[in-house]
Length: 187
Image (tube, rainbow, N blue to C red; front, side):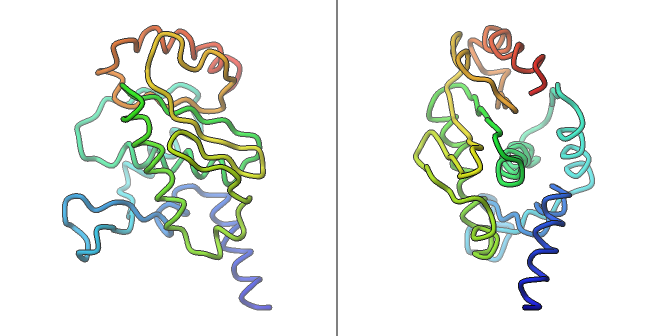
């Protein structure tokens, strides 16, 4: 019984604090060889990354101008996952230059989810759908990857829209215009 109580408290701590949950349970790819050689590493957050998560939680419009290899895409993927696991009915749209790049963003969400401890996945809403372009949970939250095109996302009402590498999107302005009504509606 004590382990169940401890896990319930831990689940509630994660639900209340996306940065705590990420820093404690996030495991990301280790493409730079900085970890222990297994190809993955703990996602230990820097103070600026904690501040970014807070910014994502408290602001509707966030534009990030950044250098490469700062973990910002991973932070955005973690935030999308956290939002879906702990808040029912969320719709997250991941946009990138093409479908392959958008699918890479969703792959990152998927591996973050798969690398959570088994007890956390058991406590979370059941994962009902998982493929290259979508993940959906029993709490009616879902994440979809889409290519950046003039009409992408028009038929959705999103809680969160992430435009990864927007500077390299041919149709970034049109995509933003298409998504702006969702943002204005509180997403």
